[in-house]
Image (cartoon, rainbow, N blue to C red):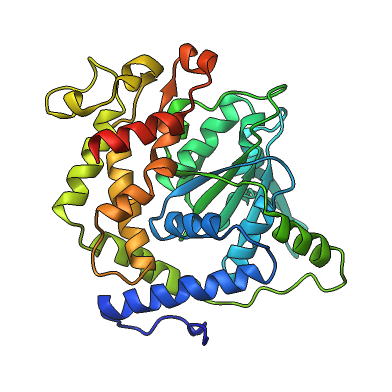
Length: 349
């Protein structure tokens, strides 16, 4: 299969041509990342959805599942700059955003001139890996929150724009709780998707053991340019969405809220009893918006002319699971967010 040209998108392409290009790029990116990472096809698909929707993603999985390698390989295949921030308890906001320093320069006459110069932090890259984001205190998490929401950072009295595209792929270890800080709901809500990275199959693990212990670790070919990425990101809001898909997205988001917080409408009657029993707080309006936007990105990646209900249903779990605040009863009885979401889809969908 011939990969899309890496020479950048033509100056002017129709939406139909961009859709076709996006579908080809999806297949080529799977092949490119697969040259270095074994398996994880569903994870790659969801990362591409986040990329085209200009959203951030939270990768959840135990250590050793190639989360860092996935993000670095994606950046390499897209010819985007890649930055990694290892979050630790002593990390300061300036360690992420950068800081102003006083610089002294001496001219030819021996006169010293002082000026303030901004030293950019590691966040000034296209794709950022925020490794183990829950290991840093809330003050540092807040610095990242501004960058994620506004795509700019303020240092001193100066605001600096971040590169375009700019997206954060954060990782969280689900098994280690000691020395961690809970992620505020406001920050979790800024992530378009929560992507769970599971263990590989036995066949895949054999291939991992074989490939990673050999001299050839594989190279990632360039598939698209930054201009291509920006063009496809601009396309996503223009992708049509059926009224049924919009209605389903809103109904699903509202059905995640316990009784008393749904407002008017018919979703309350359709929400399953498990919501009132096990959910403290459900998804806000940003959840419904995220479902529609992610569905459009998924449709674009498949070259489809419009997003439909199937795109919405395919993304319910990664879009909504981190927006549910489960109750203590749910934890005591072993009820997971995915269990509740499955019941909501059955009741509403």
